[in-house]
Length: 417
Image 1 (cartoon, helix red, strand yellow):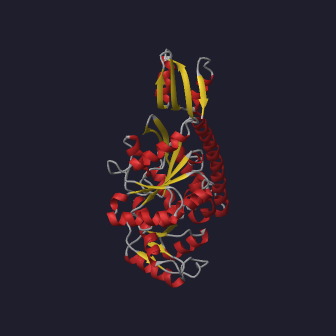
Image 2: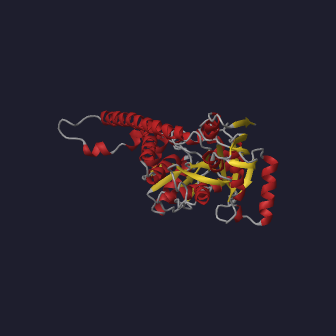
Image 3: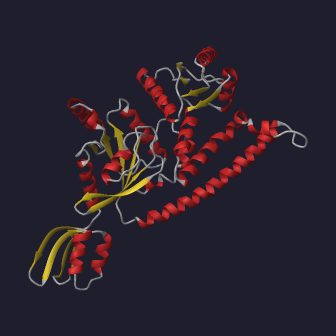
């Protein structure tokens, strides 16, 4: 059973969208929704979040539909969840716990598994008294009897110890990531960010040509993936796909994935991917901006990428473009990861930004220096080339590494623009 308890004043459309998203989250976690209940509140009830009358109505629905789990769309305090479980006779969880469960099932790499376990334990710790049952069944007998509180404290110490261990391991992983990033310092780095299921992985797969895992589900991928993408004219960019965001994302989870999101912190550009076909795209965009702000990433250079425009009619797309340009000053482009030329505008935008990183220089060198001439063509973008027999003059955009090499060559005349 799903339960929504929006405050009065929240639009009906937004309430329905939130409940639909909770439905999709439940299905993603492997559950089957048998019903839902909504109560508008002035303020949440201190004891049970929803009113006593609604608790009774919910209990009848749970029994009638044979539900064995109740999921609230809002975060419950530990005592509220315990009171609800006592009243309903079934397990109660909130949206945060559901998202944590999905992350746990989707984690594949060692790092993401450590991150999810840390978030789960930090969520569990203040709720231990409600969830604690295993020791009461296992422990007992002569020499082991004692008040339950003592056993809960034992669990609490074990969890705190494990949390400390996980933080140490994640720190080590973060240091290894930092070393990897140092090796990539000369590259132009781009990070894909956005609401879950906005199409970030589809865009990276289409740009790179690699067969990356893509699925039309919430949080289909958790582990960040980096690929080198050819953006034309001899330029490349390192593009990283990061974990998707969602409204009411558990803060423990955001904190745990902070090291993974360091990829975004050190990126030269954030591609904020928005699902243009989603009716609540503006709210999803605000949610992502809020999480970026929490992570202190809102100051990074951004390019808005409105994806899935192929799902709009021509008239809808024109109206959409007009609305975006009228109300948002952030540079934006419109794409489709499923159409043949749907990403051309994105590739052009990336190429223009990569090119700006390459200094424009005028070079004069010996026509016999074939190795250096080849390097200029291979590593840079030659804009003009002229020769007068023994000497060659070139105008080119070249990377800093090649520029440093040219400065060391005594036979090369170099003018940096």
